[in-house]
Length: 333
Image (cartoon, rainbow, N blue to C red; front, side, top):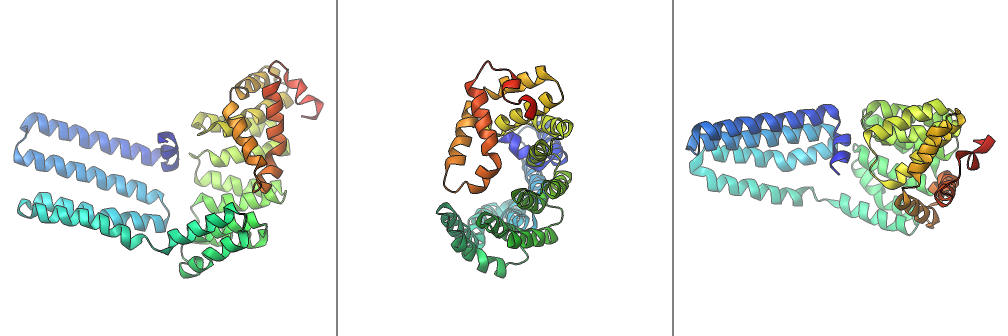
């Protein structure tokens, strides 16, 4: 979980967060050593803690898209300000602290609007494969908050699941217009073109998503898959080696990464590395079982179409524990 958070946050913001924690922590410890529990020392240490929380809020908030950032600042910002005032004005400390905690509670009611209900309703319909109803559930939200790229992109996902790819493209393009520096809209377009079998166009948008979020594993993972389909073995190894160095969050993604790496190494004539990748794949039993459940599910139409052959091949590799790479890839690798 920590690794996923730092990957999402990015190296620079993670470094800023860690440095600010270390610096404020050391200063606080220094004050404690020099002045002990003197009133002014406790005040200074409390302000340092609030300073770190403010830096953390800004650091995390600036990584979020505008709607989420506004909700975060709206919820936490006033409470931090009131807490700081309570330290600076001790006579009002109980009142101001009470207001700070009160704001945290009240803000939850202010920001808990219909969005959550509409998302939940849409997800319920998706689980029943009722895609038209799911889209209808969020249409009002998209119209009401047309400035919000999260809503537009979510509807694009629903259109894509429903097979209405033209409408999905329009929503993803609008999401990109609203948040041009966010990788998710480009990733959505990449998924559409991948679904259509247009690997080159999918590669263009996946590459753009990767440029915007190079620290996150999803884009290079998808690029590895696309290059595998295109037969560009050197590029497969380049992208998936990056993925492995960043760390993959779960077994099923490691499973397919090892499969694609093994095929790429075999195509390039490096049988030893291909064998090593297949041996690692055989340790991802959990991931194989997860993929088998996913592709067998009734709602797995798109995933099944794209990944069923790879999942089946991974199952063969796992079952035939001593077979050489040639048994799985042969001349048609």
